[in-house]
Length: 306
Image 1: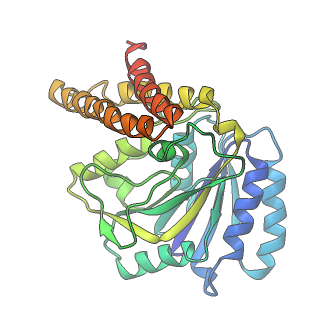
Image 2: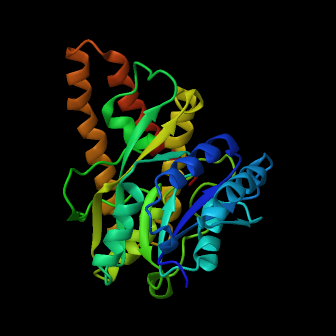
């Protein structure tokens, strides 16, 4: 009997984190774990990723907790995710990052949602951040989404028009990809390049079909962040990648849609001013300065590639 939900983990050279991720997932599987499978898509890793997966297969397959491994040699997160869609055996898919820690409620919340809402096409879960190294003084709450933070409250609801699930904790009915297509392979991360935008672009296509997207507060996980991601250089690289991704996403868009997007980014830039003043008056100038820099770097990433 095939599983009802496939949890897809796309991984690239994160063997140590993947080890912890798989442990937290298998530890928190419900008693009826035959309803699910874990599918690891190795996106051409050069580290010990295959060994880590084999270790967990050996530990868990005897208990009926299926873990499958697929290697996708085309570099890029979108390629890996699309391979996961193709290989998954279940009718519902949940994409998770390879550097997360599952809570007790994560898996059961996804299973319950799809079971109780068979017509639902897409949803997103709550993500909190776990700092494995000290949080820098310039890292404000408003930059936490860069590290995966995503929290719309404690009740199930439909996403508002200007919000989308985050890629590290999002689920779909598999048939939705037959109608809207797969992840855009020209967007998203490729190797060490920090481009993005593939999730938002896919959800935009879904919204064009007038489909509701649900927020699941009990599908909670923690996104782990280490010192490598807590540098100004990394944040700048990420912001420039966001700008480039925005340009690629809007490449074939109409002028009104481009104007709407630019206006939205301008509003965010202007919104940084009062937030920055709050931090300045609170004697936290480093947080204020980084907010301004981050917004400027996004614009720079957009225009420098024209």
